[in-house]
Length: 84
Image (cartoon, rainbow, N blue to C red; front, top):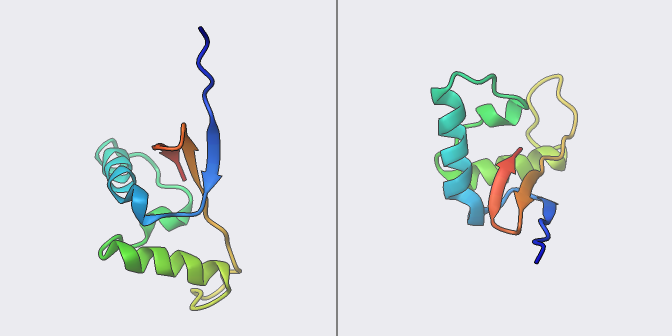
């Protein structure tokens, strides 16, 4: 019997708040370099961070010298957040 692993790219979602914050805290505690820069956005309140990412994609409220960007999260088997 073989298991099929499925990977997906999704837009950032409130559904993965706990996974995202856990992953981010782990990276910070291990002193990992946080790339891309969106990993430096304030995550409290989480909904505001999601709104900021939506705005950046629509060229709204961009920091100086920044062009529109799209952020996706890598998901494994529809429920494991692996990366940004």
